[in-house]
Length: 108
Image (cartoon, rainbow, N blue to C red):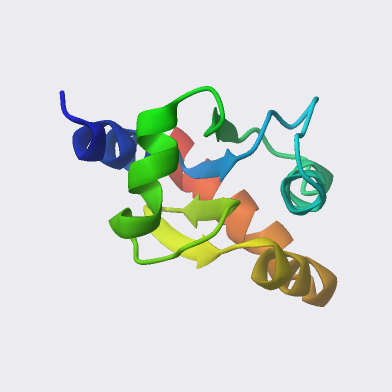
């Protein structure tokens, strides 16, 4: 499986996934930390990919959805955005509903 297929699999097989520097428990950058905290505050399970642990993902993910920075959050196979967009959605109460709906849909 080539790298773009691996990225595609992570995006499509998980209702919610964050590609981040580090892990939700041990983030390696402030933006990744804040984004993971917003997702955790939604109270649902989500997947994560540590881009620092996989140089191929680190190099190729920006071209996958034409988004140059990390973290990247995908819900229902679609790019939501990075830190600023995710936090804005959380503050509006929209992220919580998006995550809940995605997880429920994924479980069905």
